[in-house]
Image 1 (cartoon, rainbow, N blue to C red):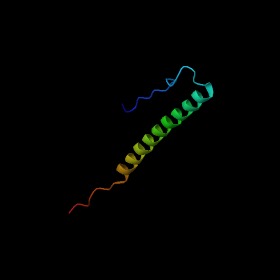
Image 2: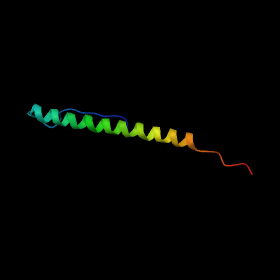
Image 3: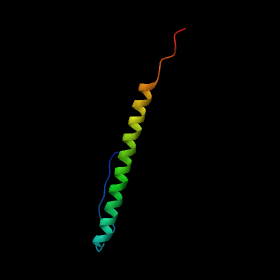
Image 4: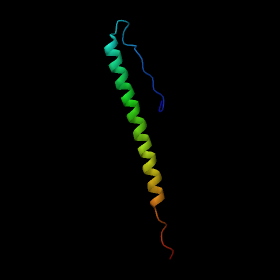
Length: 58
């Protein structure tokens, strides 16, 4: 589902803390990247629509 993220240790009860922390870091980085690119796309759309000029009247 777009816009919903989940993270946690479901890999195993004996998962090492270092591995779990690394996976959490990667999940956070992926979520951050997705949000960043969504913001960049939205900004590009706004700027693109603001710079369009109407066709000249005939």
